[in-house]
Image (cartoon, rainbow, N blue to C red; front, side):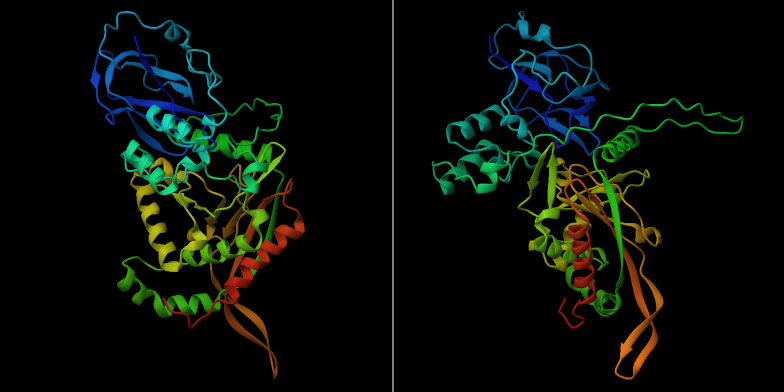
Length: 437
């Protein structure tokens, strides 16, 4: 009797496990393809998982609030309507514990390394077509899906094949030499944990961290244990940028329907600098460096809960300031409303954190693994500045801002990090005050 094994999907390149927050079905329910089966939560996003097949739910192996490793079988679905009184022996091998170490499937068969590189869910039919037609996972990841939350459906892949042809896409030199990353770089051995006894007073309030805060804490500590952090800083003359924004912000909002903030201008300068210094647009996988072709900028967004999330603006170097502003507005709104999709928070190659939005002068941000650098922007303030003129030096008021770049000294040396940061500052200082919106 055929049974489909529903496995915990991989919703991000560094996601190793997810929590089942809600089941929408129970054993014995008859379900349809694309019907929502459960809701899961990771440190990046909450998402509903649709069924890839029609059938009847035979067995559910985990309860709500269980933490489950990616790739673990979480349910069995009978797909042919036959008697399901006999559950396959593989179900007995599914661990009852919720340990994240159990990454193999219920039958004990490991998924191929190629399949494990996928950062979103694909139905068995789509994967079968991809295998038959020689479509790599990297190629499949680029397809835009018409299904729920961008899922690639049969029609999508068949339509792609009509335009692509049946021959496999040739591998680039980079793809041939560097195996795409399936997981974040393995963490360095943790330092010995020392138990700290904390006294609690009678008037103190003790509140347990919520799930997202715990995961953020683990992510930050992991990054500090993994990367050799160095932070460089530079002060930038922002007068041209400030004058241009003040002159155009009203017309910009009328024309495009979004407010003109400084962040799209920062993003434009960063994207240009990453094109100039592609070695900073990279990730580390063990002892390998992966140089990313696309420039996908993660922008740290504060949530109403006080936590942070980092949605990603893809191909940021191909967007103008208006395109950056529109996409940034969409992502920020969805983040605060809890409507981000898994694709919205995946694939970042460089991160920007705006300390200036909290009126902070500068900051030393922690690198978002497995990236190799992160930029912090400070508040823009009017300061006395010495200017050289044909008539001698003059002290004038200019709009100034600090930029600080934290980079991974394992792969980014001081010259590269310093030159990259200086290039961002140059693009901002040389901003054309007469450019059109």
